[in-house]
Every structure is written in C-alpha cells, then in structure tokens.
Image (cartoon, rainbow over all chains, first blue to last red):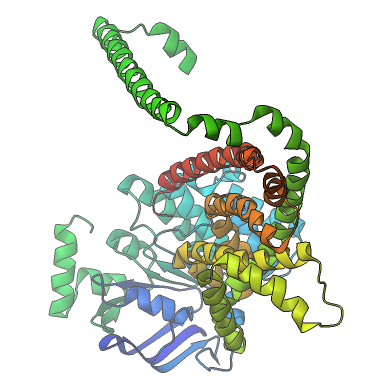
Amino acid sequence: MTNVLELQNVRKAFGFEVVLNNLSLQVPEHTATVLIGASGSGKSTLLRCINLLETIDDGQIFLDGQEITDPSIKVDDVRRKLGMVFQSFNLFPHRTVLENITLAPVKVQDKSEDEAHEIATKLLSRFDLADKADQYPDRLSGGQQQRVAIIRSLAVNPRLLLLDEITSALDPVLVNEVLSIVRDLKQDGMTMVLATHEMGFATQVADEVCFLESGNILERGSAEQVLKNPTDPKTQEFLKRVHQAGRL
Amino acid sequence: MSERNHSAWSPSSRELQRRALRRKLSRKQGLIAAVSSILVLGTLTAILITSPGWEVVKATFFDIQYGKEVFPTVLKGLWINLQLTFFGAIAIGIIAMGLALMRTTKSPALTPFRFLATAYVDIFRGAPLILIILLVGFGVPALRLQGVSSNVIVLGTIAVVLTYSAYVAEVIRSGILSIHPSQRAAARSLGLTSGQTMRFVVLPQALRRVVPPLLNDFVSLLKDTGLVSILGVTDAVRAAQINASRTFNYTPYVVAAILFLLITIPMTRYTDRAIRHRTQAQNSEGAI
C-alpha cells in the first residue's frame, strides 16, 4: 500500500508553546487514521498543518510522495487535493446549501455550473439532503449543517479527507447522522485523518489510532490495541477520563 | 395543522384577565406620554412665541409668502445637490472599495499600496471636509494644469469624493474584518485562492453587514454636498444664500433646510429600520 500522507519529524510551536514535537505519521491509501487525545494535545493543529493552514517549524509533510512543505509549492494546488471539515461547520451563511457545495468545483476545478450542480445534487440525495438544496445553512439543524460541510469537501473529490472533531458541536442525537456518513466514506475507501472524542466510533472506522499527548504520538496501533489495551499510563489515564465522561 | 390547533384553542380565564390588565396598563402609559408631550412641547412653544424677538424672527425666517416665491430657485439648487450626491456616491463606492481591499491585503507585492491607502485614509478622514473643498476648489485651478477642469461643480464633487472615500473605505474595511477567520479557513481549505475567498466568501458577507452604516454615510453625503456652495456652486444652500442676502430675509434658509429634511428624514428612518433588521438577523445567526 502506498502512503497518501506522510509526516516526518513535524514540529510546530506557537511562541514558546510547542504544539507538535517531532511527530511522524504515515497514512496509507484507503485507511482511516484516528487522532485521540485531550483538548490542546495538538490534534487540530496537526490537521491544520497538513492542510497548510498553519506553517510548520520543522520536519516534512508529503502528499502522494510530493513534499508539500516546500516553500515553492503552490499552496492552493495542495489544498485542492485535500478536503477539510471543521468542528463548527463553517458553511458560508450567504450561500444556499447547493451554492456552498458548487463553489469549489466551479471556481477551483473550473467545472461548468451544470456539472457542479449535478455533482452536488447526487451527493445531496445520497446523504438524504436533496430537499435542503435551496435552503440557507442557518435554517438547518447542526447535524444537517455538518453533513452539508462534509459533502462540500467531497464535491472536489479529495485525495485525503481531514475531519477535525466534526461532532463536537453537536448534541448526542445528531452525532450519529454525521458519523454514519463517515462510515459510508470509509467503506468507499476514502483515505481519512480524523480527530475525535467519540471512542466507539473510532473503534468502528480506525485502521490506526494515535494517542496524542503534548505534541507527540505517545501510543499508536489498532483500535483494539490502543483503546482496549493501552500500555502507556497516560493513555490509560486519558481513556479512563473519557470513560467517566460516558463517551466510550 | 397549526390552524386547526389554533381554532381549537380558546384563552383561559387567567389569560383573559392578563390581557385586560395589559390593556389597562398600556392606556395608563399612553396617557402619561400624552401629558408629558403636551407639557414639554407646549412650554417650548410658549418660550418661543413669548420671546421679545419673536415677531421679528417670524417675519425674517418664516415668511410664508416669500418662502413660496424662492421655492423654485432653491429647489433647482437642490437638484444640483442630488446630482452631486448620485455621481459622488458611485465614485466613492469604487474608490472606497479599492482602498478597503488595499488596506486588508496581505500580499507582499501590494505592500506599498497598503501603506499609501493607510496614509490616504488617515489624511482625508482626519481633515475637515470644508478645508478639503477649499484646497481642491482653489488649489487645483491655481496649478493651471492642462486638461484639468476648473468647473467648481466638478472640483467640489472631487473634494467631497476624496473625503467620503476615506470614510466609506473604513466602513467596508470594518465589515471585512468582522468576518470570522473560520470562513476564510473553510474557503482556503477548499482550494480557493485568497482573491477568490475575498470575492466569493468574505466580501458578500461583509457588505451585507455594513449596509446600515453605509446608508448613514449616504445621508451625510447628501447633507455635506451643501458645503460645495462655498466654491460658488449654485446648490440649494447657495441659492438660499443669494436670495437671503438680497432681501435680508432668511426664509430661504428655512426653505432649503425643509427641502433637505424632506429627503434625509425618510432615508434616516429607512436606515434605522435596516439596522434593526440587521441586528435581529445577526442575533439569529448566533456564532456565525
């Protein structure tokens, strides 16, 4: 299996605060890598670095073997290959659901309006949102908004999908409708890196689970290994706290 | 379905009591408002009418007959103000947008423009409009440049446009800065360039947000076009002035003021309504 994404010794600091410390990671094609860890452990920063929304301070990131942390590379070209979904949805409030989805295919991929329209409609009906196409985002429930955000990132046919705690802003009832999309995508063979606090879900989709602690991957392995039989005391402590919060 | 539910419902006796009480309270409040208004307005009118100079003021400021006589000339002057406002607003919109974009750009190639735009805004926002009008109106013709108009209407308009572009640029810029960075992050992560992000994601939201303050500036613009009269443009103010200085009767000023108010008051009301709607919409938008 080829690696879609590879991180080598990545370091990122905000001022004196080191957020990612000498972190390495490989994400093979068609696999899902799940990042777990406490808030502030660097999960979001890691995803934002991959998407080049943040500049790393050291190390290298490769996408399909090409170094994307080379300063001479065109950032927009890299982002075209990546899909990103945010915790707070970040839909464009002034555009309808359909217009949210067609924006990137039309402006970035130079598809015709009709073509983009067709892609969007197909995705919307696949995920039971066809009737919401002409609504504005603030008319939708949180779960629906996040599903639209996922579809928006899928519309450009990304090589890799980055999901940043996409259910953290949702109430428990809505979480599942969002997660079931991700399960679907996983079955389709989409390569993904996701940060989540939903351990049950992590068990279902993860090919590899990475436990992040103060900027590094402290423990990694299959979901069974890391989530059920953690060896590192810090992982054990974290999972115990998650368990107490009723999220396992 | 909601209609059926509605017809099945009849208010409880407690609700009827509450309504009766509310009506009673609002009648009382209405009465208080009426009494207080009559007292205040009555006192002010009394002071005005019983003042020793009232008869003279009435004759020199509120001469209805003379007002009717000068009305057409002042109205013709007002037409100049309206034209100036219309063409000025278009130019201001274009220049202000350019300035706002220059000031918010992070592109290194545009650094000198960002600096110049900042300097421009500082200067023209900080200097009194009347001084800019005088400087442009008398300074530019003195340069005797080839092909530069010495028409006072054109020069007056340029001066107003220069100043208002700075005001409006700041309003637009504040709108751009008010858009949450997460919107930009979402757009950029889709692969949109920074220019596309500005054009399709940030600006549409920013402009919608600043419509009320822009309407406010538009009202001010209309009023401030009266200042070009100092260059000798025969606008409403100047027309009134000419008549007033001829007869030493100041009614033309009052006529001009009333004409301005007839246009600006509805606009201000409309602006207030737009602001109210905007606030409500933003509140329902929540975190966005």
